[in-house]
Image (cartoon, rainbow, N blue to C red):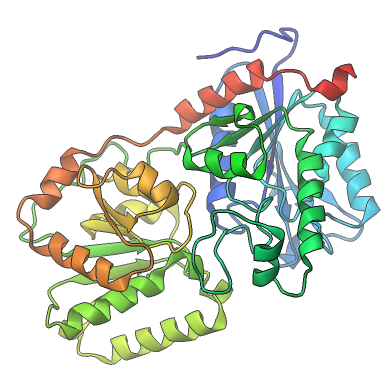
Length: 438
């Protein structure tokens, strides 16, 4: 285990800056940040502090005059009460919010500031942090493409829903026609200027390095660190004997890019072909954040489904869940489907499935393709292609020995402890910023 030696007279103080608190708004970036916060707390010689953003979707936490406040009486957990966020330039225009952040930095005096996002916080907090703490190490984890892509950071073309590999002024204008091509040039300069304050970038998968290198970020500044999690299986084996392996599970948010609609289309194709010996269990929430067409289509499908006779129902809606319910939910299925229609940078649900020895059937792009070894520990299907998914699901239900072979290929996912140790090495080895010696 790495130990901090640069300042032996006191612990290494690490400020983790998170998009939302995972107990308020679920999401991969905030979950990883909180896992790291918990992991660092267990390490000797390290003193982590969490600053998580909150927006007006949680109005009860806002207090008159408050801008940064403690969270639920928990030691070293604070919330940044974001107001009037500028989603065009990604900054908080309220100067009092900036003053509060500056005061917070001076009170905490961290040796390392590790950003896990800038959304709802502001990209300019990077340069502000550098100005206030010229000797601090600044680390930024790239969880998606928001700095590159103004279309929700997904790099999915709004024109035809295809995956984008190379943004440009004209191409970005086509996705967001109310913004001129010149705007995207200025936006790129704005993002890169603030990224200059960062000492080390990290990302959980290798394919992202190529995307950011094409955009102009020096790949030598990017380190790949896989996301780690606590083991929710409790060390229990969940490989039970069953007559058939025909139960599939979806775990995640019911928003467009997670691709649950691809599963529903595949279900209709299977039923249309006469194949009905399977069950899909949907575990998730946040349907309210889906686009209106996707939300209405999902609601209409489930309304028709529950109207069918119980023995004819192929899709079960289980609703939202917490991590302490994960074991019971996973034990009910044989396969985990990750049908995301965007790049899916890492996919924490893949790690969760592997904890319980569940092979993953996933779209063949991005972090999913990189992490899942086709025919070794899971199966790929063509992204966004319901027919390809239906064929894969039929095969999963019917091919003798397939499930057992893939289960045998599953490797344990990265642990919270391993991730924390790796980041501690980065905190210690990060070079002092150029601005500090200028």
